[in-house]
Image (cartoon, rainbow, N blue to C red; front, side, top):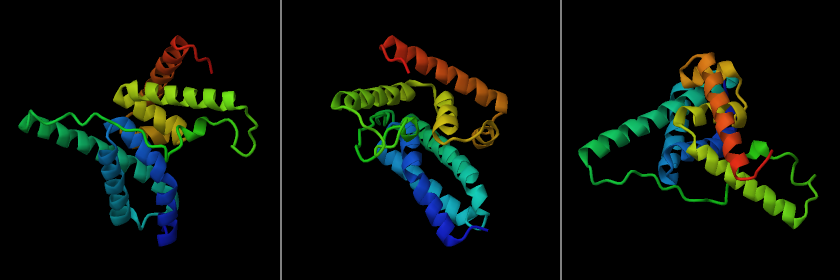
Length: 188
């Protein structure tokens, strides 16, 4: 059973990644924040008594479901109010590191020139832009596997699909990202 402190620590540890993942999906920071907050509240209310090791999987599933619920609500709203916007603008916020797991070395260990630092930032911005262009399920699988560092089985459970589907989505996402980046002269 997770203690209140363990639950709090877990939520703090996932909030930035969850927010960024939600922004990738809904392309609106305010909506993404609402989705993450709703997910965190549901985890605390309904699953706060679960063991701490179960929290990551539960949270990923809740976050996915809250995101799908958001899209369903948008579809309903758009059908009822055809003059509403599509809520597809996503601003840039410098408070969050871009794809933290793609960093090769910790900042304290890195001795880069200003040119290297600028190039790395440009590459990360390009990767982020290309991730946003991926189809929803590919983007979701890619982020869970390579950003959240979940294994195939955990990702399949969180996404509500088979392990084979996760592998297919990830393979297609990696191929599409690689092709798009190479077309822009970026070779990783």
